[in-house]
Image (cartoon, rainbow, N blue to C red; front, side, top):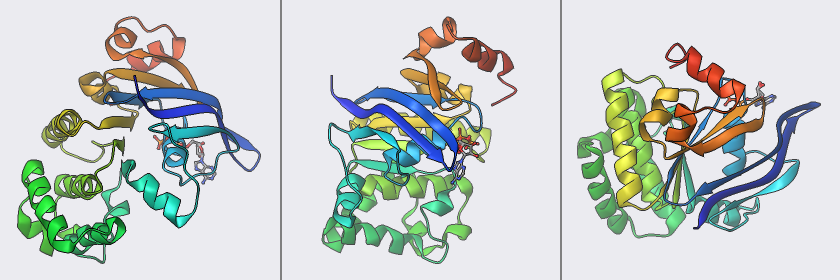
Length: 249
Ligand SMILES: Nc1ncnc2c1ncn2[C@@H]1O[C@H](COP(=O)(O)OP(=O)(O)OP(=O)(O)O)[C@@H](O)[C@H]1O
């Protein structure tokens, strides 16, 4: 089985503080994989390292079997393999640019003719249930759910093999949360991508993850098939998380 994200012996620190401690994790390709843990356990730091936005002190991260360097060319090569969907869509959608302009930027990165990209974009917008008129709007002129979907559309334009979503449902109405998770799951199947979801929300992983890794203080304390982990948690911290749920969701 292909491994989409392979993290081997990775340590990350800020000054004297170690945030990720000798962590290893394999995310099988074409699965929905949830990394769950409470706030501050290091989930976002780990994701940023996979995206090349955070230096690692030790260890290595491979994406679809490949290592990536820090040059601009390598950053662009990596962007075709993994695309993030950040908690705050504003991180992906610059507030001063109309959505359409942000989409066209992808054409430059890919070296794809703008017309061809716009054709693909039409199809992606249709699939995501976004009106074309959204392209003329600024991020602050659309709803939170639309902004999240616009960020997903931009990510999909890159034709990534891996979509990595940090708290994909944060800040959305409950009804929109379900829709968004269904959408991500459908994309995972039809686009044959790997979906990596980083969240403190057990309901999210329970709903869509095939496999789950539980993170505490920069380490993976338990991982396995999501159903098995939820039904028979082996680690005390996992049981604690499950017991405090739904208070944490
Ligand atoms: N740039 C930074 N400088 C110093 N410390 C940092 C930095 N980024 C993260 N940290 C620390 O690293 C630890 C892990 O943070 P991280 O954001 O990865 O956790 P998380 O599990 O994603 O939490 P949350 O769910 O709240 O986003 C925290 O103690 C945080 O304060």
